[in-house]
Image 1 (cartoon, rainbow, N blue to C red):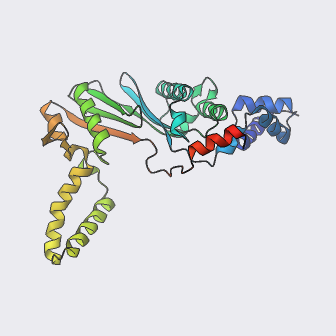
Image 2: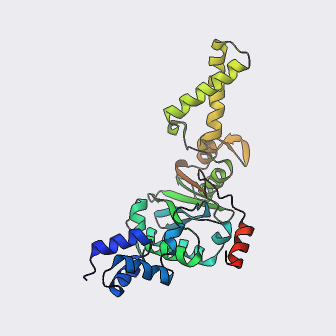
Image 3: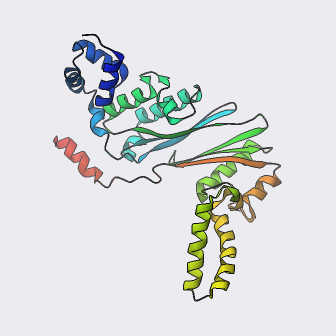
Length: 292
């Protein structure tokens, strides 16, 4: 039976295995998709399929820069133990550099970029089978700058937090300081103008209710809200935050004093917003040792 592209696609979706592995399995099994699935399972290649529903909220974030182009990404694993594995970190480097040297701009594009195992998606599937944990490229962003702009990058705790900044007019050291500020103070936005209207309205309502619950009349509560909104901006907006190395000035003032302007900031914290595993990892290891 002829091994068609459609058959290969169907087997890839069913098994989670790479394109070349699926093609070989179908060739070996005369195009019989069920037999090919058994073949992949026997070879251990389809192990990744079983990991699909498991939680992968650990891992690492990293940044790759080449000239005026940078890539920031987050790759997840199930346990922090695996995120320290050299094979895992090498995989991240291969993914990051491949995206950096490609035309990919979206996550979907990135997963189809060519690497040693076929595509980045094929590489992740292969490493999932080999390492034995669900691995995934959760997110990535390609950032480009002009010649009069600089990148600043900072990795905290070996990549548990990664921050990429772009500044105009300042030097890379100032840009790095801003990246470190972002890592430490966790701003959600760069400028006041970046705060969505619905977020601002929700915050106003919360602050108004707090003031009323404190016993303030409604008209006084309204006035108090405006003062507290300014404090809110100083917490969530990078440019408005107090600079951690000089609390008397804002981050924006620090950058301006150094002849610069903040253009962009991307901050990834591994696993943020994701459900965490709650299994007892030591118990899981013992179960594996015992063959359970």
